[in-house]
Image 1 (cartoon, rainbow, N blue to C red):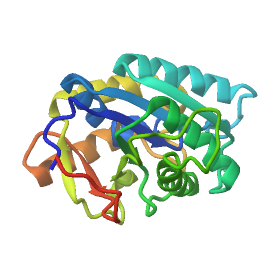
Image 2 (cartoon, one colour):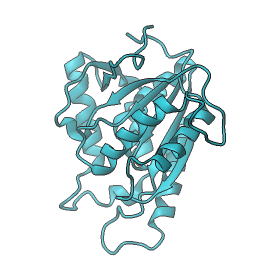
Image 3 (cartoon, rainbow, N blue to C red):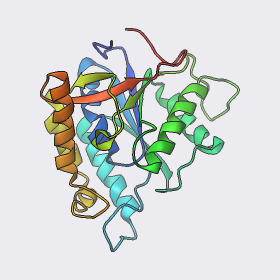
Image 4 (cartoon, rainbow, N blue to C red):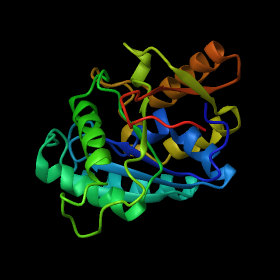
Length: 237
């Protein structure tokens, strides 16, 4: 089991600008405190996620929000720029993400569960699994050279609202719950959607999920993960 992240480079691959806050920002903050390099790769622009009427520049608004949140965390930020609902596990998309991996050179990748509710989360999951493998293969050409260290370890993140997810282990993020909320507060365009029929109050969701996973683990707040246990995808510490 991972006890410290001091020698790691941790990259979270998420679908939308506010997904890291909900699912893994506490783990990223803990890793950074241990001395790890941390980064977030956001696959979709968030260009269709707003209450009516939809602002013409909502993608730019959400980009500014995610930059503000990443600054609070002290994380490097990558944006691949795909439109909401336009993300698919295709080779061109894989190459875009492979290039992110080759630039940041992660030792550990945090990715959405395939069982999460949102189609963009599911496609992001598939892309993260494939690209984190092929980024170490010289036969797959991108601007940067293949990762010499081999494919990074991959952890599946919890699902939104914990649906259909059986935790394999927990990371204690009790010290970082307030930081997660401060990051989430940057996403004003999404917090305004709390009363939408197809949405939920995000701050309440974050606190409830963090504390529920914390109760399961016997700590104040936790984030849940599963190991990717396939051959060559797991590591020992």
